[in-house]
Length: 383
Ligand SMILES: *[C@@H]1O[C@H](CO)[C@@H](O)[C@H](O)[C@H]1NC(C)=O
Image 1 (tube, rainbow, N blue to C red):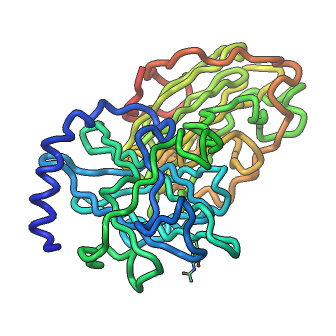
Image 2 (tube, rainbow, N blue to C red):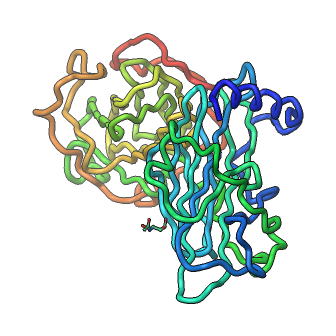
């Protein structure tokens, strides 16, 4: 089919399906609305052993710009999933669905499934997917496996490419909806909607620049840095960070000032937005006014730029770097901390003398540094 005609049909399809456009919710919950599909040649529900291929060209409605897709998928017996020609993932146990989140392009996006019917004699085969497309305006729309997909027996070369012409492929054969269609009725395990545990101070360790700081440490400042580099091509724009220090701290993200605290019985939580970046620079000034001293922090870094959830977690441990004092300019991204020492772990959350520090139950607003810590422009902190 000519692309111009596809666009026109896409717009027509939108006119009748506009009610599917919903306010952004969490990741798609289950396969509601999805149909088990395979090729048209059904033989009482049994299909020949071998592979079949399915495609869905998705044109966004007028005025909508796709950002990402949350995909829930399973196939009896196995699948390889492609989005816009790129291999996304595989599965080979139809009782266990998988989730994926992938960035989309602003125009047409192509979802393709290479399905495999295993065993030695004809038997049931089906592909099942629900795909939640997130638009730049925060709204979502869900597309599902159904007879809007095209399917053929075999594996045509280049089937997964956007430019591949599937106009002579028949509509995929709709065998019935999840979860009531036999033989797959209600047996599919669906992964939890989120695997993002958020910040977890209980998984962090208390750190300082000297051994035995849990008993006693020099009065004064210790500066800490932790640089998180995301995998190539990934960008983050938010960090949610829980932090507490004995006796006080000031937190900086990417060179901007986030906030401070001076009570080691209570941790604070900051949700900080920043310009999308592949590298996140965390800097902390810790202050000891006497006796024990240590810093405890845990953060979840996420890349909302494509709507695909958390990218990385970070907690205080020996991979943080530290140095006594407050070196000029140390909060800046790109500062050379190669001569700094590895932080010394004092012990886990719950250890004496701090015990079970109260975990945050709400966000803390941006606030100024403790005395002796550098001033910097304020970070964008969500209260
Ligand atoms: C058949 O499909 C499975 C699952 O996608 C795949 O692993 C396998 O390579 C495919 N076989 C051929 C010949 O394409």
